[in-house]
Image (cartoon, rainbow, N blue to C red; front, side, top):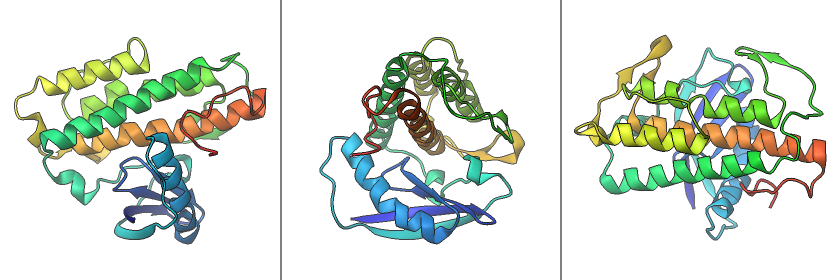
Length: 235
């Protein structure tokens, strides 16, 4: 299986994002480390989707972005070349289904925590403030990008309700715009470029990166059998 990836890096920190499947990623202190991790990430992503995983993955870097952001702390501003293209109705339906499945599984993961305010993780600061430590903090952080992501492409949205409900309303608002599948790339906050494809990818990736952190925190805090591995991070 051929996996085309975008490599975003800042000094020694690297993130590889898969073009296919959308939202899969691997991080490392170098490009080589991230490349070594990507096949296992793809295998687990396929398990999450209920697909049969393969033993052979050919990982290829098709785009590079040197970033001034702290990519080691999951910051990102890259726009994939493919994300400049219009969507077909079929592509949108599929990517939206992934973004909604991701939200649903993230919410179920959060609900599974016996104590949403307990964590053994130490306090740590990063570019956006304190790193979320508890299930509650991780959930609120992940849910509350909803308004931000949609607003970057001119869609009115909010962060009210659950991560599932507010995301669904955002997609409904997007779909009410004439020609939404062909909206042009726009420059949003901080000079970052956005498109509909990018919003879809960012939701899936952002869920996944924080779901992994939440799951790992959960098994450290409550034990391996206490938290369900809904995203198949360890299987």
